[in-house]
Length: 515
Ligand code: ME8
Image 1 (cartoon, rainbow, N blue to C red):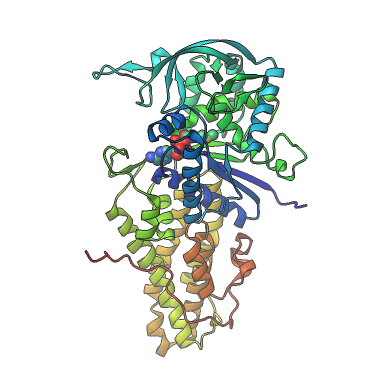
Image 2: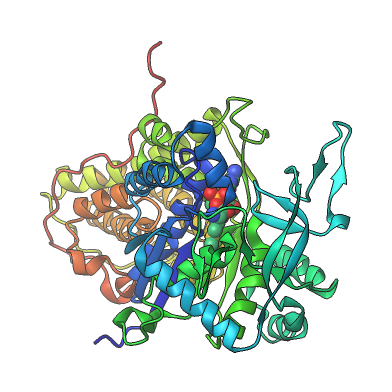
């Protein structure tokens, strides 16, 4: 048993109807950085990701490719699983909604919603977007010049008419609004909260929650003619992953989730349907649903037809894992849309990582290695400049913690890299290389102070650049148990006299490959 505070975080589960793209990688990287952050901050973290294999979109893609939906799901889920591994994700599990455990969870939540009187049979007629797997009101759709009717996300809709089970979503309008009011942090960022609240205030209609025209899905308990609407099934993954319906399962202690990290296009499902389903089933609601923005390639939406879909595996290969992770989390304010381009990535790698942090660490630690017998020098009395930079380093945790607890990863990174910039100014101004002859003791104090600041920077860089941060910490000979956030601040300064190895470069410069 552990008395550490639980922290359960999830990504959306991706449709494996194609290969994973950079949007999927972005979400996985961000969620992994948050999971690592909380783990280093002492929480008992559970991190779930996976694939959402059912629904009409999967079926249609499989039919086009002449294979079964199950074959398509298996093939591409393997790619998604390989992607999260390649991205260095520390997920505890990778769920696929075809798994037996998930069928059990879906059927149980359905039974509970039905037992609560929220499910009834009727017939549905209305607009459906297969690409979004979403039902839309006619007023949300428009017929464009090409004569095709589109939904609010710009995907074509088709008319659907069939017998269907309905969920009494209309009964939850007031309860949802009361929940948003009482829990202002339930939806983030605030643009999304406003969007969801105005959608719910506009009135909720009962939701069609089953389909009969295909059978690729979880059967409705007691009525095999119906499969569950893919979103009932998909959202339920978050509780399947922690053992539902077996409340004796040791993982169940992680529910409710602390944060569902998703893209902005699926906020309605997570902030309206999901809490309504949970309320109906008598289960606690997640504490926070946070929607990140979309990534665009030089301002263009990625699409197979434009041919600008970036394969995350190629990105890691071209730029390196830590570099890719750092770029996306630093460049794009989390919650906003963002752009990427080769030039922007190279600039971040060379400026922030190789020059600012990499060079500072390499220069200062090499000086210690060469001039101080490979031992951390003992600091003398601290000057005002030494104190200022140490204070700035000591203050980083509080800022980063506040930022990461609100998913504002970019603010956490900005705080750390401000300290990197300041440490560079400090190092340049103190000129320890000149002190070598004139005042070796003072040189020792400057080098020690710089090394101590690097210690704190590297500890806080671990969630985003885990491999390079580990190298920096190895260069400082810091033991594994000393790399956690509890060791940040003034109480656990580097030990003077401790031996350090010849430092190895942590952040190589990006050099254009020869063509
Ligand atoms: O929506 N930039 O799956 P999905 C950033 N199966 N994020 C992006 C993106 C982009 N260009 N494109 C997609 C689904 N995403 C459902 C989820 S959860 C119970 C079920 C994000 O494969 C998207 O917003 O279409 C979502 O969070 C995730 O990638 C998976 O998208």
